[in-house]
Length: 194
Image 1 (cartoon, helix red, strand yellow):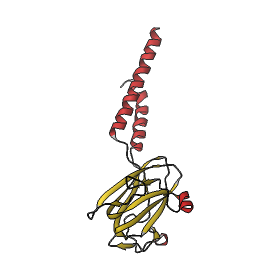
Image 2: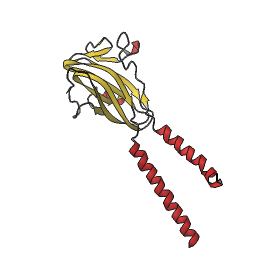
Image 3: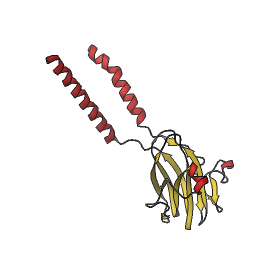
Image 4: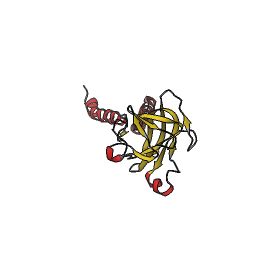
């Protein structure tokens, strides 16, 4: 092995280690995301009741028309986060800044599961996985809010995570770094000749 290779090896290892760490998704811990607690309510280690009489039935959250639940969480880093959940029925999921809750009482969502803010969605009678994204700001507290409408909605497996960057992102970054290295090498060669 050449001395030149040995000098560059630690840099290559450090770069690969940094890239590997960045590829892991950041997840947000929620209380009782699978609705397995015996009762709802923060004191029971579960979701807080917003309105009505939501029920836990067979490991699912059942929200009839007028029922709602919410939970607070904070994000540690600024990123695009994804909220996903298993759902069937008619309802909506909305995300609010925690500071908005006391002022406007859940009227100005930051993000929502519908295509229009405050839209009610009919997910059908067969459970599906629904998701939507929001731009999280480091150190900011949010309220995730679910509510039932019409025939009601059932929920399970609520999760919040920062999506893992796609491989194309890394390919573009590596191509850019390669181009920078090529340009640097040409400049050094030109400086030696000139």
